[in-house]
Image (cartoon, rainbow, N blue to C red):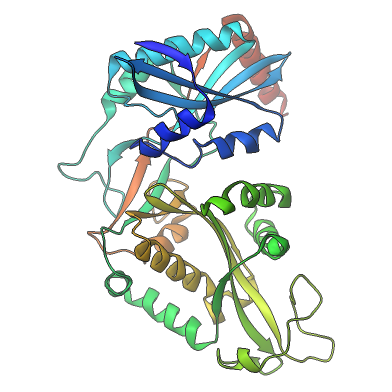
Length: 392
């Protein structure tokens, strides 16, 4: 086998065909990272002159001038192949060490255990525990720090039509979608210059639910990098609302141009006339074989009456089915489903769109790391523990 640097297009061709592909492992994400101070590399392994593994890797000085090397959503390789796994990481760590690195951090898009809709281990399902053992042998250990969720809820589309998929939604989910449509909620794709609408909703949601939102520049960069390739969509659900409450969808045709006190008509005019009000928004990646629901937000005061968040999901599930995607990834769960734990409501929202035989919880192999420069790594860990002890 041979370990080598790749050019971006050679890497892209390999990644597009990989069963482990993720939008995180693309030249576009590399460019996003480069815009934020990282340096991007592409590595591959050839066996008999055939590319059998590859990864986009980014590096950035983070500790005393030494760099962390990071593989978001990668590397793209069969971790159950012990020889390949060991060879790849032996060479990647060697490269990082000779190029100012002290730590290697990986977050593969690689499923560990097959689970069912309730998050229970599926009978006769796959189990990739051998992959974890191979990573340990290659010198990597699990770590808690991660940019990506370990669990997700996935809807298998399996060539189903939108009507077939809708019929297998939970009755309550179907009812809420119908109610949103009856209340005049419609969904459309945002243009780049309208991303302020998206940001305003996600920011208010993050304040309400106590999580950190991405800056507007992130959403703009993702739009610039992926939209021309048709691999990102920013959606907004809206309704015409005035002092009398909602108006029917037909009323939109007679409504005046949107206006108000925020982006694209957020809020009614001072004279209390009707306006098009953004109710909910969501960002989706459409890469490879799946549509991924990435970020979203909703205006709290309209959620129960309009249920716009349900209509956005239905809109994109229809899109995914019509464009022959294999699965619809609702993305992150905070943990395995547990009614007594935080985040259970998010899980119940997502599973409402799937029947027992079409939806399931996905568990990824999780983040791992390995020291590259033992001296600097040990010093970094000692300082980290000291800061934690002092409350920093």
